[in-house]
Image (cartoon, helix red, strand yellow):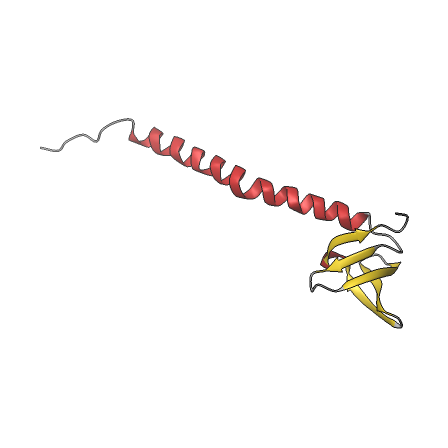
Length: 96
């Protein structure tokens, strides 16, 4: 004789997966998206004369802003080009 499978097990698993996805969203994905939006705002507000810190820990002053990169001064006569996304922090705004 074959026994029938207990009913209701499938709906429990669906609810479990939905709750698991919701928990993962609030604990991992949402904070990462918030951080990304804050960084995008920081990059958009960069301007000439701002003092910044790069991903590599270099402290520099922005000399010029281009479409996708910055020209920065790291020492007296040393200028480099840097991708905008590599800026991690603004130490001092130009007018402050």
